[in-house]
Image 1 (cartoon, helix red, strand yellow):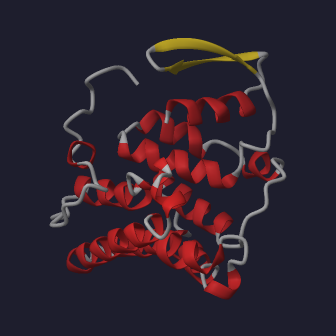
Image 2: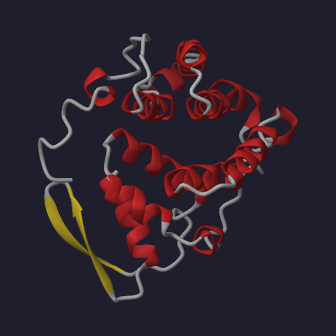
Length: 213
């Protein structure tokens, strides 16, 4: 979360450098301007990490990043990415157009509409998170838990499909489903699902405040 937030701070700053806390130390990072890594996909991942860490200041800062900066990265994504990013931004900022953007994101995750991600990642990793968010914003407690259990099953299927994926550290925690579960938990949803992919201290925020972030 700290490193990802710092990348966007360095890309967006109008000063020569920016001070960022990374691994317990304040570090001075030179202004970078648009870079390939400061893109919409990274923005979504850092948003999820900030939600999990309950870092409201970083979420505020992320939502101030102009879309034009992300587009200037030159990174290419499937059509769902931009409306999904704007859905998350609208949720955090309390904007009224969240529903329309969420619908666009869902439509962009039809397998034939996401050739870059491919059908496996689309159906097993990307779509379940959008579905969870939909259950969250519509306050569908029962279906949220069913969708969460399904998302974790699909996560395991994807990240254990072959030996290479099984060794990939990105599969150890279900970041997207965990972020959605954190939003739901903080809103008072009863979370009935337990899994090694959902570290309980992260879900239940029992470590929040143990050190400065």
